[in-house]
Length: 611
Ligand code: ADP
Figure (cartoon, rainbow, N blue to C red):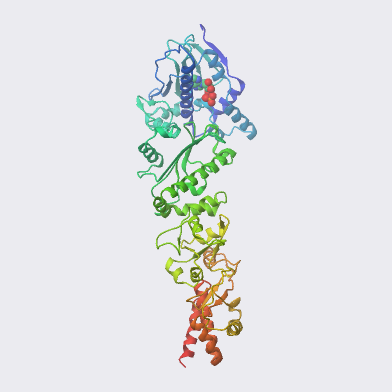
């Protein structure tokens, strides 16, 4: 080339530049990311050329990216030793719009009807984004092809560009950005370093700024597991979680189908929300081929997984995907499902391999697992497998899983039974457990105030219904009759008398076979919310209907037998005793709103007894 050649930009480029230059878009710094990406792509392409071509121009040049700033002059120079461009390539690549991303950008603008500046950030507009901050850009280049010439491309981003011969250029491209007067801060070393750190930390080629290496942390998520040491994972976890602890779980996997994905996920040692710190933000960043798309992507993982840290990289993501479109992108939804599934599976596998480790994790993070069950249906069973509870068959302080429960269940047992209470002791002492214990049936003890809700949400586990042990409808096997204190006839008469005496305090009265050491128990009807649920509904300001209980008396209990005799001798005192027994049972079941009403009854009973 002898004479400089000036050419006009393609109409679409002019339109794009016009918007880029005149927009008030505040996130102008993304141009740095775009140019570094281009440099990195170009080096990647050279690496491929090296495999197939001989005689690459200046074959000894290292594959690296160098950035230099001149604060005084207000310039940034980005140099790569990649494939460079020939004259034709300069025209094709930097004079027209070939990229689908930029085309989409223009189309989106047309749809919106105005040159809305905010759209720029949603689409990386590639090379042309340099003109957001630059008044002039020069590209010095020499193609990898030995026979090519050294060239200079320059433009002020207005109407066109000029290509001319340049003195000896090294292979690759050297891009000089002359910053606009009011954008000269970008040429300040520390400002530029911050921008590179934020967006281009993991570029795969060595990247230096004013002679200092910038990208020291490797993108280890793209490496093969075999080449990564435990220590490397730890270091990377600490880097991306801004943490000093060690990760509890490390999940590193990749897949090509149905979506390309490389993921490296960690769980932290401690749950800071539990310690009273505020709600965590999403901790897994989204990358596309090592370039940060979003540090806190919404919707990439379900909300409950906010304690998980790490990186997800998918080549299938367009680099220029916008935050807004990402949230409802089908691709992100697919990623979400896949990642969640893999994560839960990993925790489950780990729990099997090391129950003690899971126990410790569970102690700190069970809240999130339960939140996952409460807020979505997609992974119910898998999450339920991770739950752990104490039960009537575990030692105090030891937890069991639903799966383990099922290994101990009776052959024909079609339900998993649980109780909700303040603590294990009160449930053990309460009237509900003994019927199950007598029959060798395990009952899970729940003490977390969200547990009741979790059970009602889950409804079943592996085909077995989850049933609260205080429900009236539970049909337990008959046990061989012990010597009854009341005959059948007496029982029947007593039930009739009690029904009349207690009136509408309860729904119904019965003699039952559940009880051993308690005289009477109040059972919750099938469709009524449980005591804990009602307390929760009330706390949330929703009036909870007061269900009427079914009372089941124990015909083998001394008190009941005595009550039967008393009603014949002194029916008034007997009524008071019956009322008090009923109140006690209702109170134990959490079905008494106002305990002071019980005190009045109790006092009048005491009065009668001391007559
Ligand atoms: P994209 O990189 O998405 O294709 P750009 O507008 O950023 O879009 O760049 C357009 C084209 O210019 C690139 O596809 C590439 O062919 C060429 N290009 C840009 N920067 C360089 C570079 N540093 N070295 C070689 N070619 C480059």
